[in-house]
Image 1 (cartoon, rainbow, N blue to C red):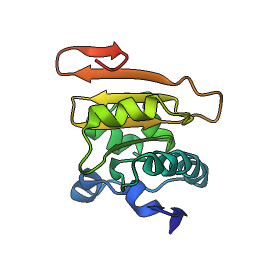
Image 2 (cartoon, helix red, strand yellow):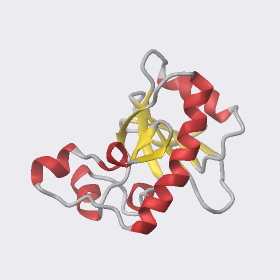
Image 3 (cartoon, rainbow, N blue to C red):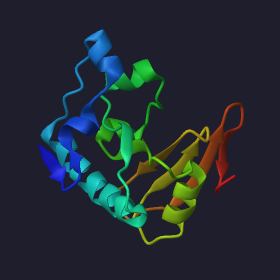
Image 4 (tube, helix red, strand yellow):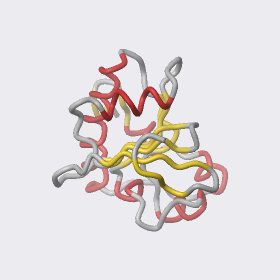
Length: 143
């Protein structure tokens, strides 16, 4: 099922850990609604680069989130966050360009220089940009 022109529900709920361990990762209708909001912003991000976004993690059930070591208050639990990369574009450049755009993101995090985390909010977005590296914790801005 297409959520937006370039994103399917399946790609936003697929989890290798859930599949491997038999964990349920089925979203509620409210979470599907949140995923629509998320995908609208992901579509805009895709448009900035003219390339597909490869989503590695979208919605996570509580069991999946716990199993992957996600934060207890993770926006992934609500269907309001996705981790992704863009083939051929450095993750630091992805964060720089999105943070300098007018996209309505809540948080944008460069995680371990390996992927980008983007979350959205139904309320006024904070447009918070962070960087996390092994052993550093979260650092403000693009580090």
